[in-house]
Amino acid sequence: MSLHEITLTVNSAVHRGLVPARLSLVDFLREGLLLTGTHAGCEHGVCGACSILLDGVPMRSCLLFAVQADGCAITTVEGLAPGPEGLSVLQDSFWETHALQCGFCTPGMLIAAQALLQSTLTPSDEEIREAIGGNLCRCTGYKQIVDAVKLAADRLRGSNRAEGGVQP
Image (cartoon, rainbow, N blue to C red; front, side, top):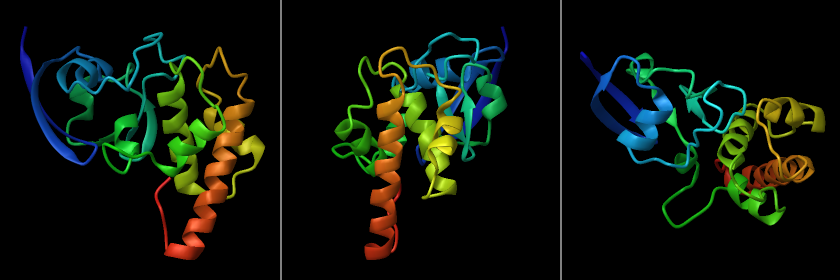
């Protein structure tokens, strides 16, 4: 089996590795980089648990080979927090509104919501539902997730007025 050298920027850190051509990106992130927040769910791109931001665009990491991401910037759920001891405004909003129960879908929901809030801080309920629509949740019924995204948007709008900008 031949190995291919790849270089990725993951959560602002550069990583190099030798990978087989058919290694999925989710497996590289979880097993190669030990970033286990990105969940391997259905492995068919249906559930959204493996979602990451690839050059700022939400993608299913189970549908990509690691070699396809060579040279790209990736943000995983671990990269959303401002530091190892804190939560982003979006993550804190999920916690406060109880937008997670078992937590399996949460990384994908956070990634989808992050992408939405990067493009608008005034999302409608319909826009939020559309943004998270590709992520399956079996526990919350989605209402709390929509509420969390709305709360994060409200907080970010307030932070932007007061401080000149805060990351979702």
